[in-house]
Image (cartoon, rainbow, N blue to C red; front, top):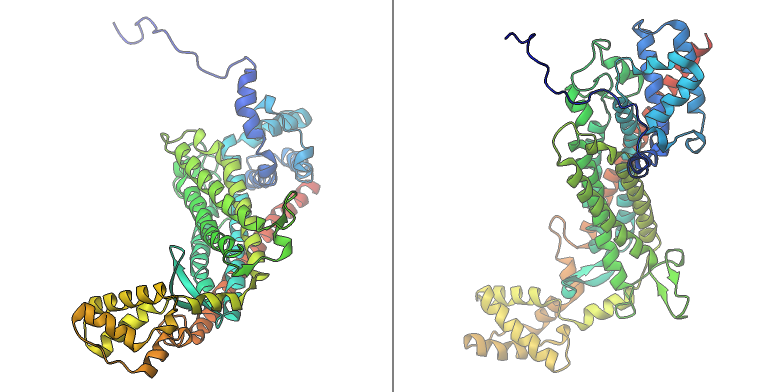
Length: 504
């Protein structure tokens, strides 16, 4: 029996359903997507304008139809998102737009579908939004880095005991400590700049998965909308997620760095430490306890870090599905822009905290002077002067520190006699150190002055680093502003071209 003579198999139902969507689907699915419409509204308008202009340029759409469509799209562009009739009953934002345009223009609205699935409009709109947000974040990273470098340089000679595990480690300065948070911010700024290059690529003209015979040159729509280039592979253009993973990971890194600083400052602003004070506008009072002045801004920064980690993990969980699935990106339309918006606000908040911080210099010196943070330098001095190995010197100093602590003495109170007693116990002989040289070794100020190697805590080194980091930060901020200006110009040019054609 030939294939044409075979009895037909039971076929599955194909084609669009004639039934209205279930209310449960509207409530759980479409309403979720519509909630993101305000974020995508401007980008959807620009994507539609660019598409019609591209079709007109190719002679695919008639002149009158192009003008009518462009007039309607320009009205939509001038309509605030909250005033636009987005309705979850019709599905995602594109469907609501299509319904409105069809009501007003009839079949003319159907030209918006030519060579383009609805997801393409949303993909273009998302990138138009994200490229601006990413450029803004580059500037935010630069401003945080610049502000922190300035404050660090101002406090390059404010001595303090640097800490590990909340224990005194070695003598340092507050400027050197604070400056440590600048290089990560600069690196995140550079990573964001690289991410922006990827975000600012056009998926336009990709069709569903394999392109469109109507749009043989995809560079036209990319140029119209101000994209740097096209996403080369059409299937990748529609379904890629790694670019957004990279973007979310970098924003999370940016705030994680600031969250570390926030946690330190929250501890140091406590009555027990009293190293720093937050400016009043960045605190919040207790409604019950009159004495409380809580460092509320730092709580917000720390909490936001956790939220961003959650959003990154959530997006990773969604996009692990097989390729070409809508759930890869329908959740991204809201989650990624909101994550970037939160990051921008938190970075600005942390810049304000650092800029207005009060440093309690006397308290820091008091703690430095009363502790034993010079022990490492003392062990190195014993090793060099006495010609013994470092481990033996370590035990000699450790024993001396323990004895001094039990006697209520400080590191600066250690004497050559105390070291000799410990040395006889450890290695069976005295050290014979010079008391005057020992006093110099035990001085926290002198210790910091010796840290002249690259990246060290010596004030002159900190000043040089702060200046260099500040210049890098200014470059990031300037490049971000230039990128935003280019986006403004490109988007204005699209609107101007559309306006001119609509009025012709």
